[in-house]
Amino acid sequence: MTPSAAESPAELIIGACTVLVHDDQERIGFAEDAAIVVRGGVVEAVTTTAEAADLPAAERFDAPGQVALPGLINCHTHAPMVALRGLAEDLPTEEWFNDVVWPVESNLTATDVELGARLACAEMIRAGVTCFADHYFAMDAVARVVAESGMRALLGETFFSSQGPEGRERSLEFALRHRGTADGRITTALAPHAPYTVDDTDLTATAELARTHGLPVHLHAAENRDQTETGLARHGVTPIEVLERTGILSADVLLAHGTGIIDRDLPVLQRAGGRTAVASAPRGYLKFAWPDTTPVRALRDIGVDVGLATDGAASNNNLDVWESMALTSLVQKSAEGDPRWLTSRQALHHATLQSARAVGLGDRVGSIAPGRKADIVLVDLTGPHTRPVHDLAATLVHSARSADVRTTIVDGRILMRDRELLTIDVPEVVRELEERLPALVDRSHGRRVQRYDT
Picture 1: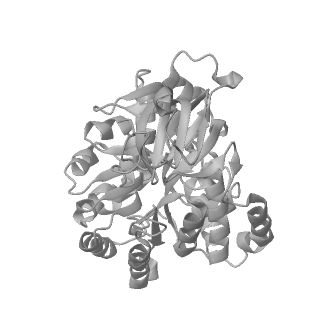
Picture 2: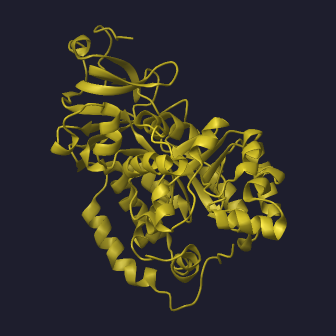
């Protein structure tokens, strides 16, 4: 589709770039010397630079040497945990939770959460992330940051059964209050923490609420093999089987991690009544020395989308989905013993369309095409580490870095231009956050928000 020059001006035209596109079979391709026409926050056309030259536009710029990609999606994170970056290093999972993270999280205030979320959104925008799925506490503060920063997000208020029914009720109230806010950029989910911290009664009630209100569920499940083996030893069922018997899998579900998914779980996931997706954050699994990773190939074989994620910066140290994309390709090659899997083009598919579907936005984002939201990032490939280009997909996945992102656009609005953030004052956020750190990291009180015992 090429718009007519007689129409009212487009709000934005980006020309002289290469555009990542998908064909009708969802195969990755690249349109050279292309132009993207944006109107009303939506991609109106992907055409040639020459054909767009005479079209009127409120703003226009050329991006030679740059590739336009759909904005990256962080399918599972805890954005405010950037405040804990580097605090709990070189520890096994149980000590990480019980000795550091959960004691510190008992100190969290809404102000801490808001400042952490602002710093996280700045980091993600600079890394080409336009949308994230968050699952944390005091999420009204995160929703406020999303609205002000211009990002897109799927948000859920975490709850544990130890909080009583009030925790579940707060999660529902948050989801209903914020669904469709920020000009539609915020979608919401119910957010039980995990099967090992939320009992069957609460999971069953959550499933019923999800069906009644048309909400997805976002939770941790089968995070590692220990959790699966503990579930089998104690109860005779895996965490995935718990989700089936409690009805969670009858709703649309986003499962975080899934490195503990085993063969007997695959038919369970395949017959799930709702849309089921898994978010994979391989850097953290390597850091915790977990013996397994998300079984991407097996999940794709049964039609389960696998989106890319970082988890929180307390375990991952950064919110760099670009790194997750490269690591996913490399770790999957090692796990499968097959250098032909996962290819660069497959990794780009996980980073775009599959990640969009994972967060329930498969009809709105994930590709640069007419009718899709104008969530676009421009990546500069003129640096010495990205030249020459023999295989553009491989260059993007294995040579380019998040620091090569020059421009980030959400809903047609430019949030970063030529590496300059336009919606967040990072020095002020850092100053305020660092003033609060002594009280935040104090563990002398002996409290914790929960106990990890799997």
